[in-house]
Amino acid sequence: MRFYHYTLLYVILFMLVFVQISYVISVYETAVDEHMEMEKKFTNAVDAAAMSLVFRESDGLLTADRDAAVEAFFSSMYSSLGIADDPEARKEFTMYIPVFVAVLNDGYSLLSFAEYIDASGGISYTRQWTETKAYAFADNLFTYRFMLDGSVTLYDREKVINGTECIFTATQKELEQGSLYQKVRASYPDLFLFDKESYENVRKAAITDCIEESLRYEFNVHNQIAQNYDIDYGFSIPVIDNARWSRSIDAPSLLVTIQGYPLYAGNSLYFNQFSFVGASISKATTYYIETGCGSGGWYSLYHRFDCPYIGKEGTADWANCYYDVKELADLGCYACKYCLPFGVHKPDSLSDPQE
Image (cartoon, rainbow, N blue to C red):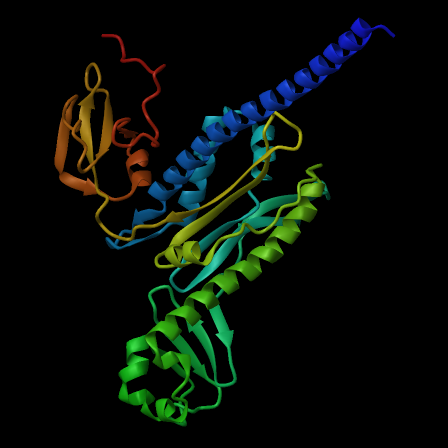
């Protein structure tokens, strides 16, 4: 072969390698863009869930509403993915959400898929909450049931506290200083109950260990179910460091996971993420209604208490405040798109009625 033949061959090989590398780079650039877009949609859905995780009961008390939070999460995801009107696409998407965990003061429960026999005699699956599980563990003296608020219920199997009763509920300070526990403090001075730092370490470890053990079981079950839907992704418990766990179990929250969601830039590229949706159990987040919005005043908006736009379009009702966005939606109000960008807004296609 002549020299220019080798030159031409090297040029061809270089072009093939260049085209291949360019294709791979293009695929991953597209995947990065898709991942960022999916991250935004997931974050918006988590924010929507957080807004619905707290509601006001009839007696004025605030508590966590896990079902409302899950519904808000899915509604946001369906809308952002453009599948709100596609039942099959919604069903497929839910398979990439293996489990929700409601982390509440006295225990936790998991929303996962369960098998049942449908009307035709076939096997179908539906999501359902497990019973509330305690944050519990045992040693040679007690069985402990911890709470998020820092207290603990002790089952005194050996009756070492006062010799008669079996069940005691106390804070760490009461255990460390209370006269009721003076005898057991003297008998077992190195027991973790009587040292604040040790107590907190054990309490938080017990809570996270209980949740992680349940998650491992649920993820194994979900892998078996996913195979029935031709999903070959291996679902597994997310890696959550101790610092993240510690911050997330100081108050009620909802753990949301998404795994194996395919990024269409490549067959082996997936979106995986998890988030703790915190429930701020307080009256700090209050909402007010603005009535008489639009031409003829045909719709109402609700705003956060500190929104600068309240009253700009209609009349602000400062006499009544609300804590539950679900209640406001039931009243027919739309969310303000400025202070509540992740709420349900008046559709742009819904114009003012003609006079």
